[in-house]
Image (cartoon, rainbow, N blue to C red):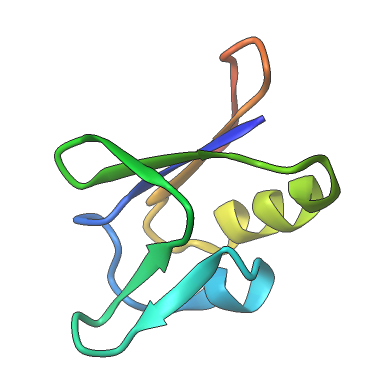
Length: 81
């Protein structure tokens, strides 16, 4: 499972931070940051989701009010949103 996070879409509600500790607050920018990720496209960050964090990652994606977080399964199929 992998997560893609669109930094530009983020509006800084930080609901994802409460759901999964891979997301951190960047108070100066007013946006969340996805730890241990790599930038694949302009301001789109990607990382693998550890098996023990899959539920947390899904909750983080579901909690995002602007769908800045997308979850894909191991086959590349979009699960959330």
